[in-house]
Image (tube, rainbow, N blue to C red; front, side, top):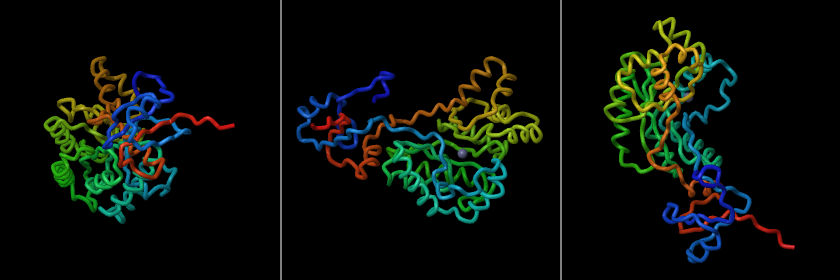
Length: 305
Ligand SMILES: [Zn+2]
C-alpha cells in the first residue's frame, strides 16, 4: 500500500529490496522474472505499508509504564515521575528502556520516532541497534538530573551529542525545551536563537492542560503560546506536539498571527529522508532482518482444494 497516489492499493505486487533499500515495486509475477536470484518472502495475510512515524516519544519511559497512572498531569509529574526519574534514570536505564520501546514500536509498524529524554546519546545508540530512524531532542529544562545540572548544561551536552552523531544516516536532531512551565524566558530565547542558527526544528509540550494555561496567566500575564512568541523573535521550524486548549488563544490573535500560530503547532514533522524501511517492519513480523536481496510479496494464498 503506497503513500502515493493517495488511496491506492497494489494487489499481487512485490517489493524488491537490496542493501536495505527498495529497488522496485512491481507485479509479483514480473518481480520473480526480473529478480530470479532473490530470496522470496511471502506474507499472504499482511498489508505491506511504509513505516509509521511516532512524532512524540519519551521512549525510555517504557520502563515506567503503569507508574501512578490515571492522575492529573502535574500530580503525576511532580509527585511520581520526576522523583522516580531522580532515583532511577541513568544512561543504562535510557539504553535499556529505549531498546524495549524500539522492539514494541517495530512490532506496531513504527520505523521512525521523535524522542525527548535525558541521555539522548544512549537513546540514539539503542535506536541504531534496532535499525530504526530516530530524531533526538537536545533537551532543555531548568532543574538538575543525573544527566545535566541546569539549562546551559543540558544544551551543551545535547549539542555535543549532535556534533558527535551528525553524520549518522539514521539519526537527526531537534531542540527540545520540555514545556513552558519548566523552561525560563532566558532559556527559551536561547532555544530560539540556536534553532534559527542551526536550522533545527523545535519539539516541545505546549498547552497540554488548563492548569498550564492558568499558571502562565498568573506568572507571566499571558498564555503560553503568546509567551513563546515573544521569546522567539524569528519563527523556527515548528514541531510541537500535544497542543490542546488552543481555541481561545487563537481567537485572540490577528488573522495573520493565527495562521502562523496554527502553522507552527501543526506538527510539521518531516524526517530528513522518507520513513520507508521494509527491513524494520518486516523484520519485526518475521523476527529476522533482510540481509540478502529479497522479494516481499503480500499476495493472498489461494487454499488448495
Ligand atoms: Zn511528552
